[in-house]
Each structure stands twice: as structure tokens, then as C-alpha cells.
Image (cartoon, rainbow, N blue to C red; front, side, top):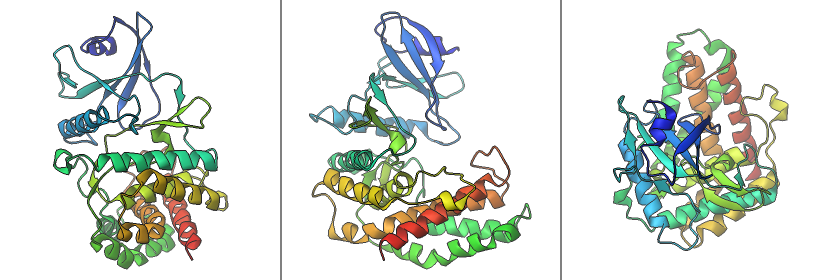
Length: 341
């Protein structure tokens, strides 16, 4: 079935007339569909290789957006699903792939990198608001879609196994990085065993997942909710610090260009706390200074394990790209940790 035929499965305001591949994500298939009356939708096909249970993703999304309709100014803004002509939230194609349609939110833009301290504050506040609003949902309605996603000790153990196997004879080139991550294991275990409250968290809290107004000054909507599941609030906070405070490319080959901006980090802290309101417990607040290095090191372990295993998970366009990604994350982790000293 072609893209326009897929779009026509949904209850649109008029006939779909054109389809353009929509950039901005690396997981799902996305198309902007323009209709005859000038309206538009975003059509997305869920990636079954990442989300092994796409139905759970859609059930979570329905619960989140249904709750948002009860709020006057939700963190997700105008984000809404368009039902199929059969009245469902998704269409399943002949290959079993799930497709959904969102109303296209006009006069908005996204950013791959944080542009200013004010923007870092706005994005963090939006994610904090999302966390606070999600806490009002019965957590039993939100299912796990990515099991053990933030099990940091398990990620480090996988790195250790990949280094021991050394299936592509790459371990000799990155012994310093391997040892730095292995040295973090005791702290990772301590954090994993800390009794943080289980919350409904976004799990991909980066500036690219915020819709801003055209000037980039106001956050209008938290988007890309597919990774939302029960977890630890500090995972989102650490992800924001990791991704919003350094403007170097994720795979930067010159480690001297990898610099955490302390004013951005402070803006993220203030914005998130304001967005969360009085939700966070003293235990969560006390551990906030550790969150950035925690999540940066975890991602470094994932990149490095993939590099040692032959680049099986993360897409690469050049040799040693995953090694460079790991080095960038370790540098960010070190700098974020030094901010707390």
C-alpha cells in the first residue's frame, strides 16, 4: 500500500494529495501528508525492530494524550492522534506494521542543538512539566516498551563481555575508554539500587523532542512519546544534561571541541525544577548532581560495546564512529561530574 493510500485509512478532513518524507527521527518512518483543503497530518509507521510490542507503545500514547485533554495547557501542547475511519488509534498494514496519524502542528520548529540558556531553560521546564503531569496518571496504565533500557550495570556488563570476546579485534585501540567505564560500575550499581520513586518518564529528553515557536523562544509541546514508560525521573534529567549542555557533534572526532557549558547546565537544572514543581522527593533532588555523568557514562558503554561488536546496533557512516561517540560521552560525563565538585 502506498503512502497516500495509508493516509486515506484515517479520518482526514479532506483527500490526501501529496506526501513528503519527514526528517527529524531515526527510528520511525515519518511522512508529512498534505490534504486538498490545505490541512496536513504527520503519518508515522512504528519501527518493529526497536519497539517489539508496538501495541504497547500505542496504548501508552493513548493514555498520555487522553490525560492531556483534561488539562488546560498540557506539556504536549496540541499534539493529538487522528483516528482511523474505523475509529481506532492506529492502522495495521499487511506486514503487521502499525501506523498512526497526528495533526500537523503549524508555525513550530525543532532544534538539534540548544541555542541559548533561555532555550535550555524552556526545554527543561517542558520536560519537568511533562513529568509532573504524567504523575497524575495511574502508572498501571503505562506499560514498559523498552525493558531494562536504563539498567546501567547491565549495560556495563555487556561492554565487559564485548571487550572479552573482542570479536573484531578492536579492544586494544580503546583500553582507556573500557577501563574508565568499568571503573564506574560500583557507582552505577549504587544508583541502580537506590530506592527512587517509579515515575512515568519520557526516556528521550533532548531539545530535538520539543516543538518551539518559530522564534525558538517558547516551548510549545513535548513530542516523541514512544519511549515513555515507568522508570526513574533522574534518567530524564541526566539525559537533558547530557544532550543540552554541549554543542559538539555526538560523533565529534576532536575531543577538544567537546565542552559542557556550565550556564546551560544551570539553566537545565532551574528549568526542570520549575517544571516539576513540588513533585520531586528529597532523595531525587539530592541525587540530581550525579544524573548527568550517570546517563552519559551509560550511553558511552552502549556506543563502545557496539563498536567492539562490529557496529550492529547504532548506524555508522565511517570507521570508528561509535568509538568517537563513546569518547564524546565520556568527556561530557567527566565535565558534568567536575561541575559538582
